[in-house]
Image (cartoon, rainbow, N blue to C red):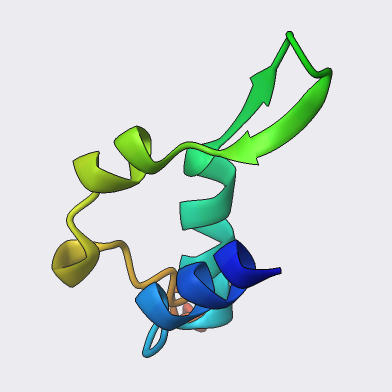
Length: 64
């Protein structure tokens, strides 16, 4: 529980899609205890200031 709060604090200010990106990048599997875990080493590799924004491209109506 304490780790989840620490992670949430680290990710504050990010959009939901950016948080999903971070979690999908940083979650790893521990084969010894057969459970997922948040890999802080992978987290340190990320540049949180320059994460993709995941904004959708606006649709353009073409005249044809």
